[in-house]
Each structure stands twice: as structure tokens, then as C-alpha cells.
Image (cartoon, rainbow, N blue to C red; front, side):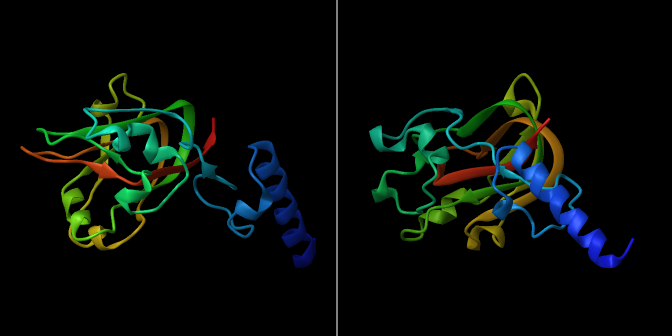
Length: 182
């Protein structure tokens, strides 16, 4: 088989795989194979969410999966808990997915993004989402990125963010989970 035939065959396979999982071919990794999948899409968009408490009517948990990545609270697209001990937020993906990355969009207004420092990102299939494996912690380096990206290769049904400590407020402006259905 000539090299050109191999490239065309690989591109066709990627395109077909993308169509089967309901994503367009443009969302593929330019025909590159990854350890997770050929083509991933945001599987958290519009899914059921919960959080420990709600700061006010503008901080509803579902705001973090509404597709709006604005980091400004005034856009009413961020989820936010009340000040509490160990606040958390969680999304139920509704099915099992092979997940390759989780992207978290933080607040960008003022210096309020610092509130996310020390937050733990959990992912897995445990009955209680807060019992899932910690796949990463948001540190001083990550806090500067928007989005904050965690890579993994794991079967996941739930993703949670937990902020350990007393008198903490958890705000997430978008959580995207990229994977394919199993």
C-alpha cells in the first residue's frame, strides 16, 4: 500500500468515526489517532448538574454546562456556591464515556479567579461522585490558564470539582468534558 493510500484510509476512518459518535469531522484531531479516541466532543453540555448550595439566582449549577465560557459573573453563565465548608459542584454525564480531557473555565473578573486555587477535580464511575478519583488539583500555575485543562484516559460517568477548606466559595464558569460514548 502506498503512503498516500494509508493517509487517505486513516482520514476516512476518522471521518466515519466522528459521524458515528455524532460529532462533525472538523472536531477531530486533524486525522491524528489518540489513546482515547479518534474524535471527541463535549459530553457534559446540557447534562444534569448539582452543587452543595447556590450563591444566588445567577449562580445555578447548570450554568457551568450551558456552552457559555465567559469568565464574567455579570454574564450569568457561571455556577456559584454559597460561602461554605468544602463546597462542590458535579455533572452527571448520564452514561459512560471514555474521556480524554476536562476543561474548566475560571472567573476572569477582578482577582476572583484565585478563589479556585486548591480545587480538586474528580472523575470516575463511583456511586457518589465525590468518591471518584482526584485527577488533578488547581494550583498557582493552572490558575493562570483559561481554560484549565486536565488530560486523562478514563471511563467516566461523573465529573466533580471540590474546594477543600472552611469559608470557601466555588465558582465555575464552564466545565467541558471531552470524550466518546462507550
